[in-house]
Length: 159
Image 1 (spheres, rainbow, N blue to C red):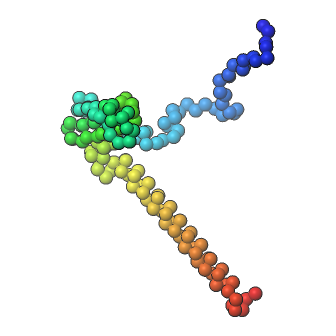
Image 2 (image 1 turned 60 degrees about the vertical axis):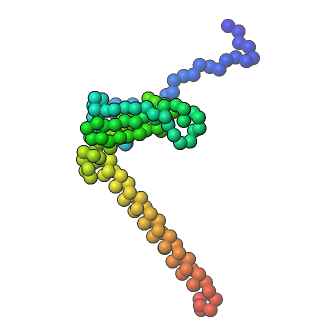
């Protein structure tokens, strides 16, 4: 086989793991718990759902306004209605509408004990604490600058 000047690139090898790092046997969801890994959300029975596809609205112009990719999902026993038009894909919107409906049903069934509300409250408390600390630091900084300015004024008797 003769190679010319413009030979092709060598074949790509599969990406390798870092040396000395063992492959984890846990699924990714077990290693990094997140919003989607909630265990106690109620199971949706497809017989209790009423699904419609309606035309979307909002930014996007003709591509959004002409296509019926907005999913309206109604849970018949509770009367909870969810409308999802987050993407242009009907399948993705259907999945997301079902996730949102499960979360709303969880809040409806469990009330204040719902894991979703508990996490939301924890998040709000963390943000408030962060803001409080930032304000305290700003106050300290202002006080320090005022003290430095007062010390550096002429006629204080200090050198």
